[in-house]
Length: 181
Image 1 (cartoon, rainbow, N blue to C red):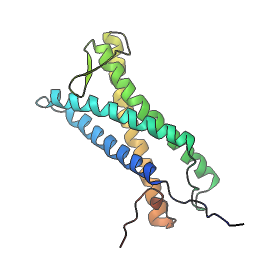
Image 2: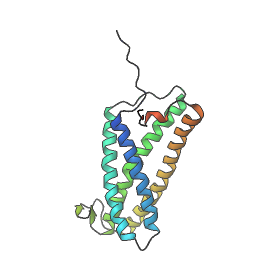
Image 3: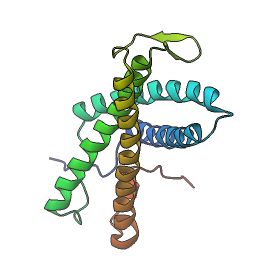
Image 4: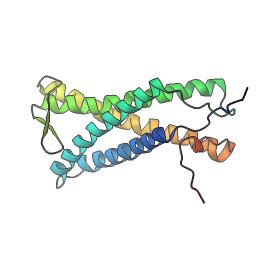
């Protein structure tokens, strides 16, 4: 009987999806910030913002399906029982925010009465009724979730850095790619 060592790293496809999501979300947050502070580039940035929102929704959907069908590698021994619960809550929160944000954006555009067009010509069906009050509420929710995402991402990165720099437990290596010499 052979003993199979427990996997300590996520699979390569998971790591690719993780870093793709991180890049897309960071880009989206930057575009959103510039967009609301720029009159000159607003229209062009909105087109990119909506299209990236759809891409993020699809990528996160793939990640959720994968997460539900594949077990994550074991956490390092330095992660205590309370912290394990925080890891689960944080992961679920990030997934919820990453799904809610593009859906709320889509509903917001729907409530504005404008057609929901992404990638220049793909028209999405409206998912919310037209209404100024609803549009306003959804716009506020979209902004609040953006801030919540920044906080959740900062907490996630901080925890990984704590484990990597202070505890030296290989937490970051679970999601990075090894360079071959």
